[in-house]
Length: 527
Image (tube, rainbow, N blue to C red):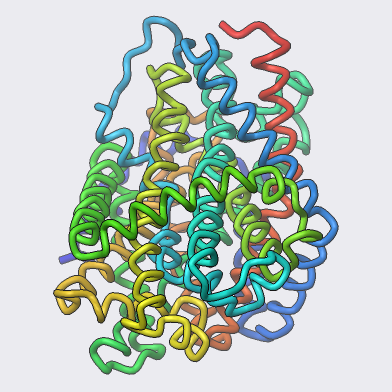
């Protein structure tokens, strides 16, 4: 049925409308060729791919870690000022603009479009890794692993990595794009967000192709990395739970299911596909949270979450401006800075998607939905999942740390779920949620990539179906090939480091977007 429906969607392409849409060859061709070349190199010599990607990524973080930390704090400060000042009253699209989507639908698309599989993957694993010092994260913190203080540290650090700072990056990038497009009537592109700094000349010549190509590459590689990790994660869950050994056949089946899901959603468009899938995904998230708050140790969750927030605020400036010299590479570089690289890799194109769905909203509403509420969701999610896991680890209910040491950084998830009451029901629900989570992120980004590869497309127009189909299939194929035939976990690492390296490249574009926001909102006149 899925294949028939997909075929139907492809056959219903409006030829006349598509023919009017011209492709930005300067963005489409180099992006597609580089992504395809990376996949080919992974097949031919994956160890070489992983090595050059990792060396480039590590070298970049060691030399630019300070810049990641500074720009993340600057983003947070700007977003806070814009949200709570008179600037927040400005309406995207002008005073007469009307929102297209009701609040709940808008928030569901914003939340699930940017969340991917991260919170599910690391909601249990990351706090346990910190708490148990599995990879040396606690060695320079002065906190003794396995103690009550270590649990509070683990919660606070997880909140730091997954809430207000990273969502400030998404929100700031999205706001600059939205304001330039809806209020200044510029093109819907990453390059247009830099006009306040460089004038309209930045949108002409080779620079516009370079900037938008880097943004497309970063998000395409990021999606391939997320899908590859998702295939391995769900495959390991199937093996651990049902005894079906993971391998190329299982990965292929999962890749087909996930790719068809987000491809169909993207082909159906924003209103009939992405909106519906996001709504389903968000409701599953809410249901899981409600179930776990009753199943888990509620008082411990509330106490540890509150103390974790306090510990984060107490260490805000040290954590926020430490490029690894204080906390050490195991904690800062391989967790926080790596996370910042991935968030920044997604930010420019995620910003375009957030802008598209926010027409008619005030800047304050934009920030509430894209910055504040997703951050609160992250606190609730890590508080419930991480709090339950930490409580179990401390009380010897199950040794999640030993499981992670033996089987890898994400292995604790399935052991955790298997020990929940009704785990036999919850595990398949979480597997479906992982598929939905990736699909809702991928369908929105595939649409955005296709839009960025189209000349002068409007926010309420759908890009050509063949472009969405081509990018969707390319991402699915790259992820499967890297996992199945390019060295398994090594294959995932190859794309993962490429994605992070892409974020390092886009870092300079993001820095310019931040500078553009400062000039536009605090120096120029905002109308």
